[in-house]
Amino acid sequence: MLKTHPPLLLASKSPRRQDLLRAAGIDFKLIDVDVEESYPDDMLAELVPEFLARKKAEAAMPLIESGHLILAADSVVIKDGEIYGKPENRDHAIEMTKILSGHHHTVITGVFICNHHKGIGFSEYTEVWIEHMTSDEIEYYIDHFLPLDKAGAYGIQDWIGWVKVSRIEGSYANVMGLPVHKVYEVLNDWNED
Image 1 (cartoon, rainbow, N blue to C red):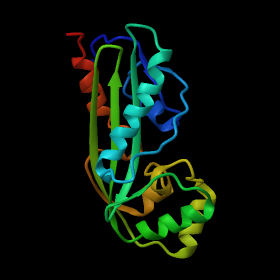
Image 2: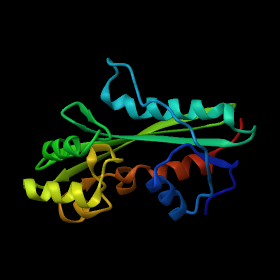
Image 3: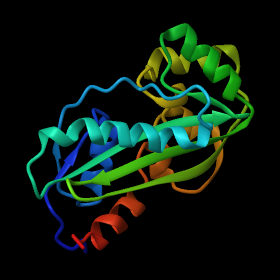
């Protein structure tokens, strides 16, 4: 059972992150922050998710009361060293899915939990294998499941996850957008020293 921790504010519009926290019994409220998801061009792809999570958390910091915690996260899909974030439109989503089809990629979610006194950041890695998809399957998926708000243009919890993801190594929740087991651990161990 989760120990008592300071009130938690989730700086994310992702319904999946909200669902994951609720499923884990972690109480939170939403805080609305708009942050441009930009990062330095020369930054290593593996560092981007935690960088963006920290950026979101720091943008929310002036909006919170003393004694509250902010939780921010960002997920990216990486294949061959290239980042695949949220697609810009249907055509971009189709293009991304074609690239991921029949291959293995890495999902990295960066998390930053902080208050006015300290912050803890970490990244979680999960390896995902997607079976080959025909053009018809790709278009069916994009048109029926509308994954335009998801990194890599797919959601493991929907059709593609059930019929085309053949294997994962690591946290399933991480692919959905939040490594809940690590968040739980940090909140459980949170203290103000």
